[in-house]
Image (cartoon, rainbow, N blue to C red):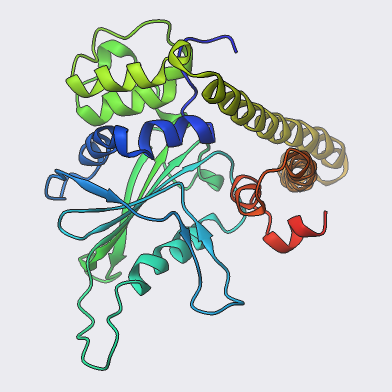
Length: 306
């Protein structure tokens, strides 16, 4: 597989580091590094990642990591490997599940809610230059548009545009810097960087070392790595197709407008085709439809008819 440590952007790698009880100290440290206004998290309890709607026909949600701290606050942590249509809508939709789950039975509930945090680790940047090139960490709350004060502080979305993080080892200052550096570079490292001396990274590099995997773990990681590489190639091919298509259109419509339009059309067409091909291969491997849906973004209904 060409590396000493796992790729944390694979489903297996992310779940191994952040989604297991034995490694929860890694998740605690990572969350504490991000949430500066949050009281320090000392312990967490993992919750079921598969959330069902209130009715049989309601759409369900499958989270990468879902947990609560000792104060009862909820945390959804997602690794998003490729840009999706309606990504922001999806984030808001997912946040409704822990909100709804807090409803108390009976008629005397006072609607008092615990905070809900959604953390999105993005292997892409938001489109249309929504944020400046040097701005990669975003904390979003409900705000009054007139005087800019936080109207409701119990619903927080944190997004990390990982391709924008380009600090080198000697530039790492904060704990957040160190965590982002690890996520961005782990699969390319051949030894532990000298800047990462905190005890929590002892555990991380121990769990991330591929040579320590059992035969079954190695097989699961290889399968997860194949899916990740397939998705990367689909996105890359779609972008190249879109640029070429845009260049042709640009001769008639104006080069700049044609490239932008063709890239968008080609990307959407290529990604959909790639998702369908990937879903077929994963079905043949016997993967569960809900897992295929989570990886590809296709609906259960679309997967079932393949």
